[in-house]
Image (cartoon, rainbow, N blue to C red; front, side, top):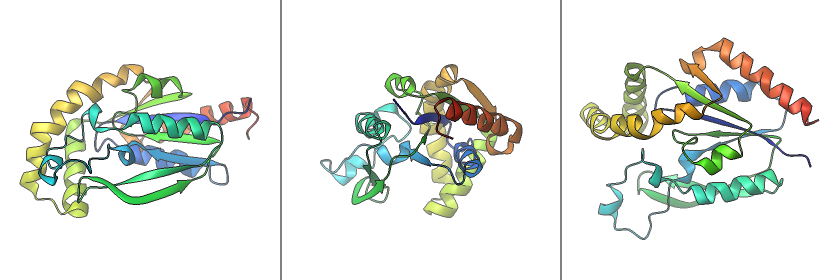
Length: 210
């Protein structure tokens, strides 16, 4: 039975996961491919008071609704459409919006803890871990959070020291051992990305998709 190719792209915050994902996506323009970001699947917290939602640790595995993510992936594997949730960080819960997603021949699952859940790993054809030095990751996170999310420098540093760094060491870094390929320096590693594209093309050809 024809089945989509599933690629997992993991790595710490600011590692370059999105750049790697985009580079792979760009290499298959004209082909059937979709990106499913784990960030969209944070748990709904509408039942909690706003003060409690403010305490959310977004770098902990329990923050994600992997049950819903698995349900959606299984539908996509059957070439059925899904309604992807949208998370609103301003209210720390899901918004009322949804995004209609049509099934494709290639599914890229991207997220900091996408390799942490065994169920997710088991449906992946290729598992990637983007490995970037901590100093580069914190700089990229500062740039993103200050420019795009209106955060102060002090708040970004405080969150990194007290939450992001310990969560990375405890939960994200250990998932590196599950990766088939470790890509240093993210989207700047053109050789590794080219090798991944070639491997994906081979799998697609074997499945008679290309």
